[in-house]
Image (cartoon, rainbow, N blue to C red; front, side):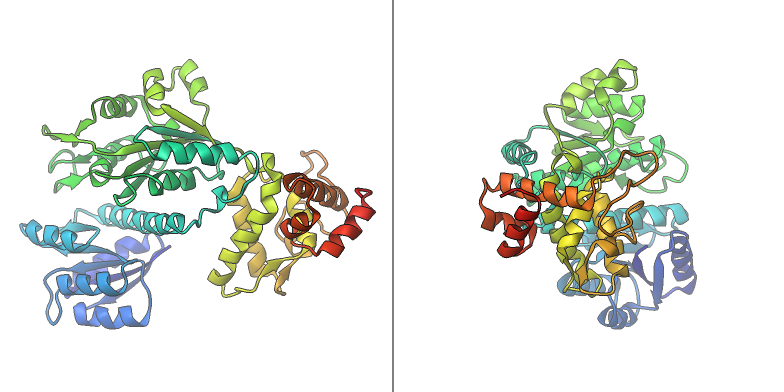
Length: 448
């Protein structure tokens, strides 16, 4: 759900746009003109603004310039009358995300436009976070991640196509953004499309755009995401979901770096760097006849597999601490931290959802916890099958017995000592406990 401001001096258009977006449960407010919108923008934040260009008191272009100057994170979609595309293009040069042309074909067009604007807003924020080093799934030096980070940095310097594989939640999109941020294309756009999120027909139009009249509802020309990514990086997520006809079209774009819009005859250049990702076994899909082998080889010029969180357990505690430092301020609780008892509870889980599951668990725990220190008992509220106390039960009847609290704590200590070559002071810092406490635990677990 997003917060959207609709600005138009025509009540009927405002109501149509608002009702279209409320289908997706967006929080929509309405402004009668640019001046009214400016007052609302000064009082509260919005994710997306949809504004008419031709309005009394303050027009949409002036409002757009104000938003770009004062709230650059807000995505702006402009609405223009039929035959006034030139004014919409001028608005896009100032910084508008895209435009809707009256009469709008229907709610689906509005919803899709806002969905794309929100996606770009998230990607821009993610790119800024990556440039700040705010890339949690990749930010720790667990042995399993060292070769991954090294490979990503090296390939980022080239324009080679990268295929990221790994389980859901391992940070494939973060890795793609990192490749972009470390590349010579970093100043260009980072555009992403999730192949599983759209039907085959919609996905083709989303990728390559369409000409006016190409299909029912195509009332105007639309640029595709490949075209919008010119000079930057194109991230094709869940590429294993592509149907065979689109696989063939994508292969041609990768081979020839050219494409046509749906219903169009003019050939356009695809000046993008490709990064694809999948959680599926593409080689098995090739054997089953579900994925083209030639496309696989075009995508897997430089394959990188991201390891699951359970294979880099020494990453779990520092990663959880880093995530909590980011989650806390968002929830109005910047002082949240992890108690040592929580470390063992976190290590007792296999985290089948990987970093995504870890973050979600910490966010739910942070909401429910009463104190500033999150302990094992707080985690017990959200971790299925975890009861807290001295022993940790299995997460579910079907799973094997999870380590006891003592076993998990002993494993965390030995892992920290191994990571820091036996340096006890660094191991204590890594675990978030005092040196004296570490010595007591070494004695308890007969590790002296």
